[in-house]
Amino acid sequence: MRDKIVAGNWKMNNNLPESITLLEALKKNEMHSEVKVMVAPSFPLLFPVKEMLKVSDIEVIAQNCNAHKQGAHTGEVAASMLTSIGVKTVIIGHSERRHLYNESDDLLAEKVNTALDESMQIIFCVGEELEARKANRQNETIKSQLENSLFHLNAEQMKKVIIAYEPVWAIGTGETATPEQAQEMHEFIRQQITERFDADLSENTSILYGGSVKPNNAKELFSKPDVDGGLIGGASLKADDFSAIINAF
Ligand SMILES: O=C[C@H](O)COP(=O)(O)O
Image (cartoon, helix red, strand yellow):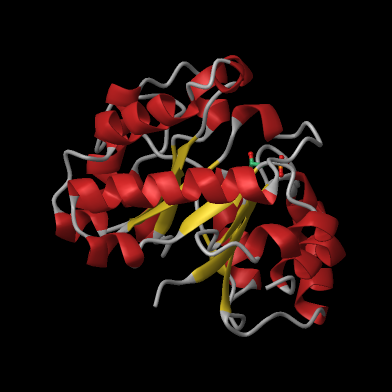
């Protein structure tokens, strides 16, 4: 049985006082006990947020890591630094990293390797831009993202990977993929994993949907058989909205 996961990606939001306020509010809310909940603050907040969530079941995860193990990379953060403070999961390949910071499939494959060398779990993001969707090229886009950055892994390594399908046209735009579109893409992704690895691994891989998930659309999205949860941006910044999404399962 694969995990149900709701992960809040705070992106470059929430300073320390804002994080404290959000977490205080979040801790007061009831949350679905069968859902794994994660939050991804920015790097300087990882440690304090972990401290604040010490007695809760919420996992604190990182938004990114560098492809190199260590060295002269001013301003960058190594996977081993994350694990040294107890962060065990990292998001790799978010569309904002791909598009705003020109992260290529090859670089993302290197980051995946480095994170796995540190025994980290990875939330690997894939997603097509609007242009590709309009030209009905969403499947080939996702297939090449998977092939170029993930399918060099062996099955043991792939077990550490969670996929997040995030159509770029739905991120922060208020425009969500319909539950049917999400299901279709998640099914396609699962099928690719089956073909490359096997049905067992594919059935056990959680595939999250991301892109304008809100309390009013989460239930329908999560009701689809291949949608195992969400990677939530904007709505994860409000405790009640984030809790409502977690409880939409
Ligand atoms: O990582 C989260 C996604 O980019 C979705 O962001 P959003 O919920 O603000 O659309």
